[in-house]
Image (cartoon, rainbow, N blue to C red; front, side):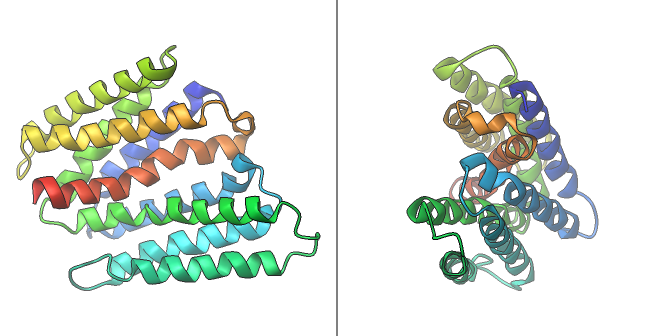
Length: 246
């Protein structure tokens, strides 16, 4: 999958997050979008990192991410992420069990465990969108971040490399976040700019990190790489919402 195709995919998924934040009953639609993000990450994660046991890694990442999203949705009161450490711990145990059940001599064992665990962490971040939607700023916080994320992702399709691409992504996201927040109630320009800055740094940083992976030419690996920025941004947006906005 080309850089431009991944950028468009990231922007479309970010738009889906923004739309899901406003569909009634809230946040059910956003929960569905977060679940979709987990599925897309898990499908291509083993191929993206070229893990030796893709089946087990894919299943563990999927279960960990979906468990985190469902737990965040079902938790009735604050703090809504209080059960997340338990879900992560269970997923880590599953990762080790998956390695114990391998019948291929457990080659590249350390690489396989590390790759699976990192995939769990990424997938679990999708629950941050659900948690952010349940804050006081709610849908407006999610929409501001998602729009900034979409514009930052679109900027990645431009023929820029390295730090220039990162700087452009951050600037585009800050301007978009501040502009969107200005026209939304319960949000102000400064908070929107901070939210956009976070989205821009995540998109630009991951673009720098992943752009040289040779496996991204594959469809599933490219799809997973395009989904990772949207997934990871969810948790950062929730943190920014707690520290800056609320």
